[in-house]
Structures are given as structure tokens and as C-alpha cells.
Length: 211
Image (cartoon, rainbow, N blue to C red; front, side):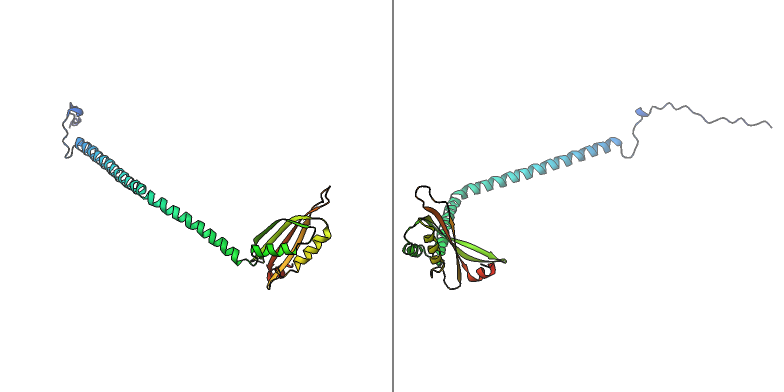
């Protein structure tokens, strides 16, 4: 029996794919166009939203600027009143300090002028408050400074002892310390420039400070 001749089933393909119609259920052109339109709509929406927000903000800023301009005259009046009030408050504080001080200026000057010895000259007198701190505890004290000239040093020593024991400075609950600084005498007049420092502090502070 002769063998059957087997040959492949062959048929020439003369189709050109680029010229064939698109027979898909959903065409590719439609998908591409839909995506492009969607992106364009989203972009337009985002741009519109930003512009709308910018428009609203510009309106808000303009309204606030108008309010600020309208409030400026009233604000200036309020600032002027506040400034006058602050200045008046400073005067009140100064008066309170003056009247609460145990050494009123006129009384201090009267005592010093009556107690001055011959040969002792005053050129400057100051009275200042001083915060004294010992072991984390602070209290208010006073510092009195006297500057001037003296003809002889024993006169200054005697006046220093007089101030140390003066009743004006040794009130109940207070402690006084007087120190002196003397410069070299003038070459011609032989007068000594000096400075006396009187420190008045609470007695409890003096004991804690060891002075």
C-alpha cells in the first residue's frame, strides 16, 4: 500500500492590517478621545476652582484693608489715650515710691544740712532704692550717697560715726552701714575729695549677710 502524501494546509494571506476596519466592540479611538476629554475637563475644573478661591481671597483682603483704613482714626485716638494713661501710671508709681520711702527728700536734706560739720562740704546727695538679695530672699533697702570735699580727714571720720548712729537711719527693723572713699588731696588747697555711702537695709538681711 502506497503511503499517503501529507502536505500542509497553506493559503496565502493577502490582507493589509492597516487598511482593515476596526471591528472591536469599543474602538481604540473612542477610548483615547474619552480620556483626553476627561483630562481636559479635570484641568478646567482645577483651574476654575483656583481662580474662584483667588477671587474670594482678593475680595476678603480688600474688605479687611477697607476695615483697617476705616478703623485707623479710632485706633489713633485709643493709642493716644493709652499713652496718656501709661504716663499717668508712671507718675502714680513714682509718687507711691516717694511717699512709701522712710526718708523723704526734704527731711533727709534738712537733717544732713543741720548735721554737717565745719570744714565739710556737700556737692552731691542721691537717694536710691536697692534690692538686697540674701539666700534667694529679696527685700527693699536704700542707698544714700554724699559727695563733696573735706579739709581734714578726722572731720570726715567724725561725721561718718555720727551718721552711723543717727536715729534717722537706725529705725526699728533696719540696719545701717556707712563707708567712705577718699581721693588724694588737691596739690594747692590740700582739700580731700570724698564720697560717703550709706546703705540702709532690713535688719534680718544684715544678719544673714554677715554685715
